[in-house]
Length: 359
Ligand code: SF4
Ligand code: SF4
Ligand code: SF4
Image (cartoon, rainbow, N blue to C red; front, top):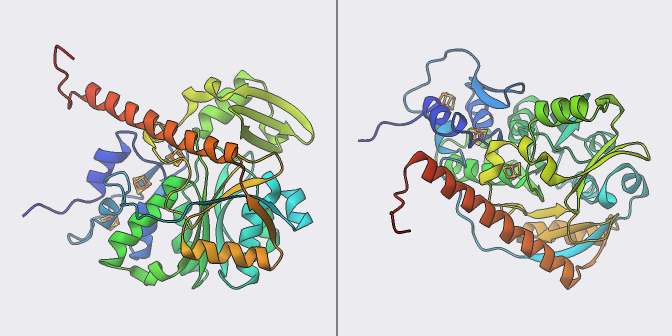
C-alpha cells in the first residue's frame, strides 16, 4: 500500500518547485483540524511548518487538498455576463471599478446571506492582510485592488473558530477559488472539521492575470527603481495591459505590464484560470467601460444572490456588449495557452518529456 503523503511531500513537490499559489488552503486545513502546525511566512511568501512537529500518520490532508498537487474537477456551470455598477454612492466612490465586489458583499451581509466576509486589507505600505469583515466600514477598508499575494483561505478557520460564524462570503483570486473547491472535495469526503463545508456560502472570484512578489514589485521596482514612496500610494490598477500607480488624483506611474512580468510569482506562470471558474460569481474590470465591472454569474446560487442584489437595489446591470464578452474569452484562452506552454517548457527542462531528434 502506498504510504500516505504529508507536508514534507507538499513542500518538496509544490512549494520548493515554485508551483505554490499561496492560496492558504494547506494552512487553513491544518488549523481546521485543530493542529495549527502551518503558517504563512509572508517574507518568503510560502507556507511553512511553525516548528518541527510530528504529524499524525493518518493525516496528510494538507497534501491531498492542495490544488497544485491535483487540480479540482470543473463541473459545467452557467456563464451569464453583465456590465454592472453599484447603486450605493458611498461604495461607488470609495471603491474601484464601480464598487461592485464590495456592494455584492454589502448585500450579502444585509440580507443575511453571510455573517462575515473574507477579504484582504492593506495593513500598511500595501502589505496585504486577510480580514473577516462584518460591517460596511470594514468592507470599505478591504476595497481596492492589491497585486501582491494574500493567503485568503487562511480566513476560513479564523471566521469559524475565532469569530464563530456559520455563514461566510469570500473574495479571492481564481487559484483561491480552486483551492477552496479542492478543500471541499477532499474535506467533505473525510474530516469536514468544524463543519467547514457548510460555512462558506458565497464565493466571489476576481479576474486575474497574475500577482507579484511584494519585495520585488513594491520594494525593488516601485521604491528603488522608480523612486516612489510606497506610503504615498493610494491606488494600484492594472487596466488595458498597463500598470498604474496613483497618489490621490495624481498618477505616479504608468507602465506596460510586460515591464513588471519578471516580478510575477512563479506559481502564476503556470496558472490557467483567468476568470475564476470555481466561483459563484466572478468579477473584473475587463470588458466593461471604466467605472463599471464585468460580472460572470456561474452557479445557481450565484444567480440567486445576483438577482436579489439587483431586486433590492444594491446594483444595476445590463448584459455585456459582444465586444466585451469576446475580449474576456480571448483573455481566458490566452492565459490557458500561456500556462500550458510554460508547463511544457518546465517539463522539458526537467527532462520528463522526451523530445525526439526529429521534432
Ligand atoms: S498552493 Fe495552496 S494548498 Fe498548495 S501549498 Fe500552496 S498554499 Fe498550500
Ligand atoms: S499532515 Fe496534517 S497535521 Fe501535518 S501539517 Fe499536514 S494537515 Fe497539519
Ligand atoms: S495568476 Fe493564478 S495563481 Fe496567480 S494569483 Fe492569479 S489565480 Fe492565483
